[in-house]
Length: 297
Ligand SMILES: [Zn+2]
View 1 (cartoon, helix red, strand yellow):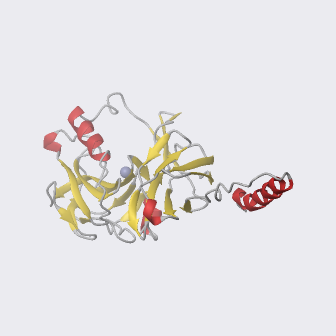
View 2 (cartoon, protein in one colour):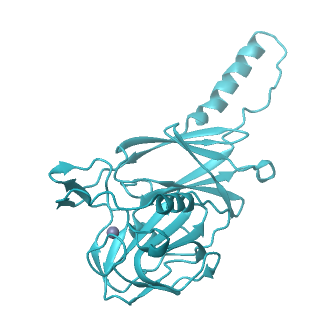
């Protein structure tokens, strides 16, 4: 039941009270009902899930894009998705605190407050022994270019339907694996993607349509990630494919789902041929499983 369902009763009571007192009743008009319907999917998300917040204004004429905030700390953009609806995509990760998560939809006519219970989830762990010097791979230009790519938010939605697996190789490391380095739990580490093991030279496909937003090569300082392709799927959804042996695309190219964009390799910090596919939503690496099994339109 929604709190506003009480309002007609209260209004009737106050009208009766006003009539009993003999005063002139001024109808202020109905208190506006909530100006938006909001659909949250999934309704019981778990760590690593992407949460879709669809906002449906009840008055189509007055509709401007609302803002969506999470726990009053982070704001996410909404984009029109047809049918007079707007959608925000909210990333979650293994680093988020599970439990009550407040989603606020702030529009010009109304604010809706909703809460979801973010479910905890157990991720596998790995124990890694690092020798001195092994942890400082990577160059500043590599980090800067990857960081700039991750901030990309194109208004278009390039992806359609569920995403495809980018490699036919077997999954060698799942999303979300946590690590101990030299016996110490790494608070900020989780495996920010899915690894597929396959022979060097095996094709790497775009998991969904998009625009190539980043091509980085070992020769340009990509010593940690190796040869790298970033695909902008639009609306803050991005793929990053790393450790490639070959790159078939250029920045600015538009690619289709399933199109071969490169080949598996072991460039950068890698111990054997594999593809690491990171799927990012607003700079946070999310679990691709949900996007593979159904996706978001
Ligand atoms: Zn990986």
